Length: 503
Image (cartoon, rainbow, N blue to C red):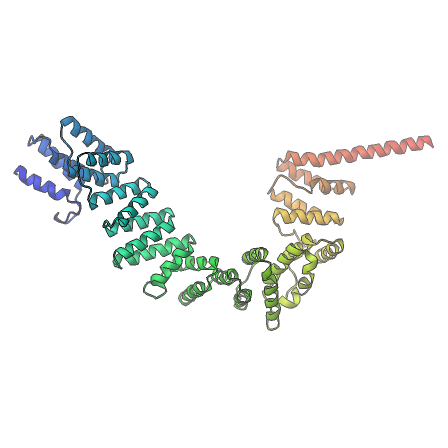
C-alpha cells in the first residue's frame, strides 16, 4: 500500500465529524496511533508537522489526555519541529475534553507568539475547556464577550453552556444564555428539549422566574406536555410564590390525568395562602374535608407560620371560618391552627372564645394538641387551672400523652408543677426521659424536689432512666436533691430530739 494512501486514511480519521468514514464503530484514537506507528517503524517516515498533527488529533478522543498533549509539545521541541496552527487548534480541542488550564494558556501563548489566527472553532473549544475545567465564571464572561463583539457562536456551544450551568445550579445565568441562544437563531428542534430541561431544573430548585418563563414559552399553550413529575414541581413552585393562576392551571392538568392526592390539595391551598387569600384557602381545605381527604395537624404548619408572620390575616381567617360554619362544618385542623396562633401571640385568654366554639364549628371537641397549646400559652392562674382540669378529665390517665417538641413538653411540665399537678408532670417527664432528645431538663430539679417531698417513688424510675442514658449531670441533680432532703429530715429529727430533752 502506498504511503500516500495511508496518509489519506489518516486525513479521514482526523476528521472529527467522520463524515467520510465507513459506517460502524471505529476507534479513531487507536487507529490513528497504529497508522502513525506503522509509518514511523515500517515505512521509516521521518517525524514531521503532519505526524504531530495526527497525534494531536488523537488526543482529542476520550482516550487521550492532557499529559499526552504536553508530551507532544515537549517532543516537538526536542525534535526541533515548530508547532503549526493546526497543531495548536487540535491541542485546544483536546484540552476541551481533558481540561488543563495552565497548558491551555501555554497553547494560546504559542498561537499569539506565532501570529496564528484564533478562529471560531478555536475560540469555542477554549470556552468548552474552561467549562470542563470548572472555570464557570470565566467561561461565561468570555462567551458574552464573543456575543457582544458580534462573533458568531455555534448553537451547540450555547446548548452545552445551558446544560452545564443548569446542572451546576446557576439558573439566572442559564436563562440569560437561553435568551441569547434564542435570539441568535429563533427556534429550532433543540429549543423544545432545552425548554423541557429549563422547566425541570428550575421547578426542582423552586426557581420561580425560570419556571414561569419555561411554562409560558411552550407548556401553557399546549405545544409541549410536561411529565407528571415536572408538573408536581411546577405546582410546588407556584404554591411557594403564591401564584394562584399557575397553581390552578397545573392542578387542573394533574387532576385531568390522575386522581388528586392530598399533597396536591395542600399545594393549591398553599398558593392561595401565600397570596393572602384566606377565604379561598379555607375553601380548598373544605373541599378536601368533604372529599374525605384527611387534613392533619402537619398539613396546617404552613398556615400557622403564615399567620404568625402576618397577624393581620387572623381576623380574615376567623371570619371565613365562622361564615363557612353557617353552612357546613370546618375541618378541625384549621380551627386548631387558628387557636394555636392566637394563643401563642396574645395568650390563651384571647383565644378562649374561639376555643369554646371548636365543637360547634367543627363538630368535634378540641384535640389533645390544642388543649396543650392553650395550657402552655395561658397567662393567668385561673385560666391555666380551668384548662388543666378539662385536660385531666379528657386525656390524663388514658395512656401516654403525645410526644411534643422539647419546648412544649418543658412548658407543660412547668405549668403542671406550678399548679401542683405532680402526677401529670411526672408522666410528661418520664416520657421526655425515655425520648432522650436532650441531656438538659430545666424542670428536673423542681420536679425532683416535689417528688421527694411527697415521697413519690417514681423518682427512682427517673434516676434509672437517667442512669441508662448515662446522663451523669442530670443524675447528680436528682441525687443532690435526695441527699439534701435526707439531711433536712435528719436535721429536723435532731431538732425534735433536742426539743424533747429540753422539755
